[in-house]
Image 1: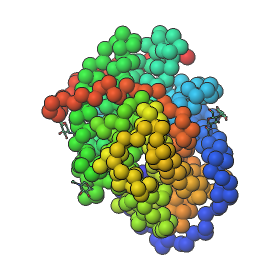
Image 2: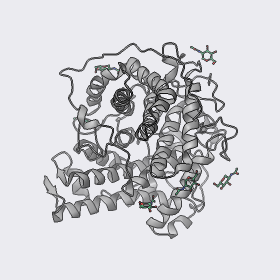
Image 3: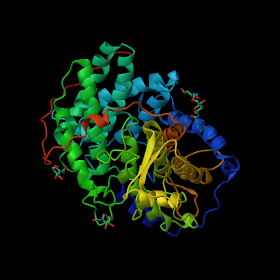
Length: 494
Ligand SMILES: *[C@@H]1O[C@H](CO)[C@@H](O)[C@H](O)[C@H]1NC(C)=O
Ligand SMILES: *[C@@H]1O[C@H](CO)[C@@H](O)[C@H](O)[C@H]1NC(C)=O
Ligand SMILES: *[C@@H]1O[C@H](CO)[C@@H](O)[C@H](O)[C@H]1NC(C)=O
Ligand SMILES: *[C@@H]1O[C@H](CO)[C@@H](O)[C@H](O)[C@H]1NC(C)=O
Ligand SMILES: *[C@@H]1O[C@H](CO)[C@@H](O)[C@H](O)[C@H]1NC(C)=O
Ligand SMILES: CC(=O)N[C@H]1CO[C@H](CO)[C@@H](O)[C@@H]1O
């Protein structure tokens, strides 16, 4: 994941040997069958990487996931706060959709998180909250004391959102006391961190750019909005949550009129990065309008950005030859990427699909679809004759457009299918010119992103986080922060 270690490794790797063609077995079935079969493999793939029982977890503590099945090059037998929180989010969705067997692992994750919050580390410790921004730990929940890109301030926000999702479920079941005892004290620390540190520089989700990141800012905003709602439901206060409008204000800085410029500074890149699509799907609110301010998946901004981003990868990779405008393509992190040779990633390709499934859900729920001047180029690639306008669900144009968007979205899943070997294992990457798997096998986040993408494809969405109620921006952006208070959380048994 981190660039600097890899440059050295690439130098050692020497000449790249031509690889055999990828296994094609998975291609032999139709897309629905692939999705059905691969979904079970992806869920098992996630579970294999979690302690205490996962067969690849190598003694990881209960509720701790390794990042991927690779000891060296890249070294992924560590646990990242971001990857694990996003993965647990996907498990919570499966749990809420009816798979009750996943509840114990969710609870183990929460209990272990309380312990992790107390581990002093090179980012700091819990007394002033600074230690919460530490990006990764050893899998026995001790500190990782080597140089790294730290802090990574998306972690506490994503973790709070995962705990809030499960907490809201318990609340709905009438278990307020359990939420107050086992969940709120942990969430409260993570929300306090966001309120106190959101305006300081940190590393982005690829651990490469120090500054401010669109993804981080977007998930921080969501965490404070849903955190405030949980606090209210519990009769608690969340002082940190009062800065949510300022974080939303800062989020607008990343939109340059054409595209999301995902990092400030850009470190000499264009700033066009799957960071933006990952932010859109992580902050997807099924009840929202196509709000530009929160970059909802169906918003004109997010769709315009999707087009520019995907088009950039068409000429970047050999395997995208023939995947011209309007056809799905292999997608990576950003076109200037050189990590492991700079390849498409499964989680990036799946995110490109997921944004479109989310948008389809939103249009269906709203009962219409609007094509604006900004989003027109996105739609024109799929339906060449379309014009700006509002198309109600009953209109033929709505049906033509949504059917084309769905075909386009399915195309990204088909790309994943094409480069998935017979055993269904998902590594981190697939090679840019051959499609052969690259980097860590069994990447936890690859499997988790498959689960969320195909759930959305199936119309299965998370609960609303109340985004539309909070769209008012302050008259002027201000760097307002709130000094947090932090305390060791001591969850009892479940
Ligand atoms: C899609 O939803 C249907 C009905 O809710 C369910 O039976 C099916 O298993 C789901 N498919 C996937 C891939 O999740
Ligand atoms: C772990 O389980 C998977 C099935 O989910 C299997 O394919 C794999 O071989 C197992 N690995 C080990 C090391 O036992
Ligand atoms: C539910 O989760 C278990 C793992 O706890 C898994 O083995 C099973 O296949 C899942 N069921 C469905 C329908 O996904
Ligand atoms: C702090 O907030 C101000 C006002 O929104 C913004 O201009 C600035 O970029 C922010 N800096 C960081 C590091 O978040
Ligand atoms: C927005 O950023 C992109 C990518 O860096 C750049 O190509 C484009 O010119 C910028 N547009 C404006 C209006 O600044
Ligand atoms: C700044 C800080 O708290 N550093 C701590 C990081 O973690 C190691 C090991 O847990 C401690 O020795 C450091 O003091």
